[in-house]
Structures are given as structure tokens and as C-alpha cells.
Length: 307
Image 1 (cartoon, helix red, strand yellow):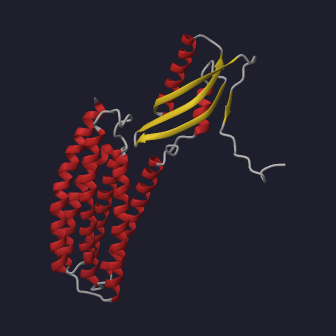
Image 2 (image 1 turned 120 degrees about the vertical axis):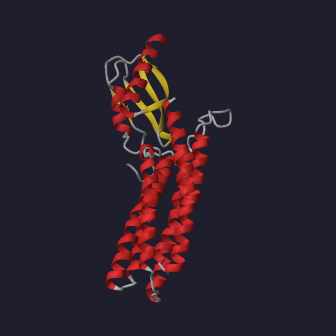
Image 3 (image 1 turned 90 degrees about the horizontal axis):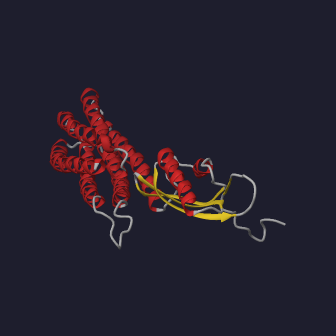
């Protein structure tokens, strides 16, 4: 219920952010065209990429609320991850375009209207800062984090535009404008790489960030009755949902006894690592002794790997 309420409130914030961003983009393009400021135009393009970002995030938030069905047995949790991945790629394209335009402005300098830069920069700072503040509670969700990073980067670039307008007015050096555009492009690339990397890791079912298989296996081995853990696989269903599958060796015992061990293992996984979706296969043994060991996946042997 808490997750559903959080998703609905996030959807409202994203909807408001979409309307405010469209209005801001129109303002920056018009002001940039009249003032001749590349930093304003580039920030307008940067904000324009927030529009598909917000639309994709809005769709992803809707899909994430849908329950599992026979075709999507895990539900639609990865809709937000896929949205974040696409948004990251869009950010890279925009950053490269801004760099190209900045290079053109350095080769052929153009006059810049500093007053428009400062006024519109202040308006944009208020809008992007407000959106970022509204999205702060949802930063643990990769989909919402992508939107948060978009708007936080926008807010930081707005500060650069304001400072750049003031410096150009004081010094008369118009090359400051494309330099600010390069700075904006660098911030865009930095945030894009992080989002692309994390979303790609989830889509490729890599071990979730911050979780180490050895530690997870060690925690399971600490449960009384567990003798051996092997064939451990950990992956993410979505940005906040992790899953695990493994084989656990125990002594030959009744089903009720083994179920108590399974319950305790799931409890440890949930409380210590936030892993709530588990598939545990028990293997029974009559081997005497009380040992606890983790058997990682064997290294494939080749003709040259040993003697």
C-alpha cells in the first residue's frame, strides 16, 4: 500500500514537471534566439530531452502499478529500468550536439544578450530546482532517479548560465557562453553514463550494486541446519526489487523441518540484503559431520588450464 501511494504521488509530480518543462523550453528557445546565447539554447535542448524523459517515466510508473499476468509473470517492474536506459542514451546524443554547437561558436563568435541569459536562467533555476525537490523522495527508484538527475543537472546548468551572463556583461568576452555550454554537456554526460550503466546492469541481470555473493552465501550458511550453499544467482527485477535462486544442502530430514530452515534463510535474505523474491532448492545428504561451506561456480577447464 505504501509503494502504491508513493507511485501515485510520484506520478503527480512527474505530470506537473512535464507541463512546467514544456513551458520552460519554449521560453528558453525564444529568449536564446533573441539574445544569441548558445548556453540558453543548449539548456533549452537539454530541457527538451526532459520531455520524452518525463513521458517515458510517466508511462513506466503506470506500467509498474500493473500486476503480474501469465505473459509477464514478474509484472512490469523493468518498465522503469528500460525507460531510464533510453533516457540515458538521449542524454548522450544531446551532450554531443551541444559540444558541436559550442565548437562552432568558438570558431565564429556571436554577440550575446546577457540580460536575457540572467533573467531566463533565474526562471529556469526556480522551475528545475522545484522539480528536483519534488522528486527527491523517489531517488531510490532508477526511473525516478533518471528524471531527478535530468532536472538537477538542469538546475546546475542554470546557475552556470546566470554566472556566465554576469561575467560576459562585466568582461565582454563572449567565448564564456560556449564554455558554459561545454560545462553543461559534461554534466549531462556524467549523469547519463551513471544511469546507462546501472540500468544496463539490471537488464543484463548482473549482481545488484552493493550486494556481494560471498557475503550473501555466508549469511545463509549462518542459519542452523545449512551445511553447504552453491549455484547462487542474484539479480534485480527492477530498481528496488532483487531476486535470488540457489541450492542449499541439508541433512536428510522431514519436510516440516526443512521448511523451518527455508523460512529462516528467507528471513535473513530479506532483513540483511533486501532480497524478497527467493527460489531455494534443497539437496539432502547422509554425509556425517557438521560443516559449512560455500561452493562458487567452478571455473571452466580448457586444454591449457592445467596439467
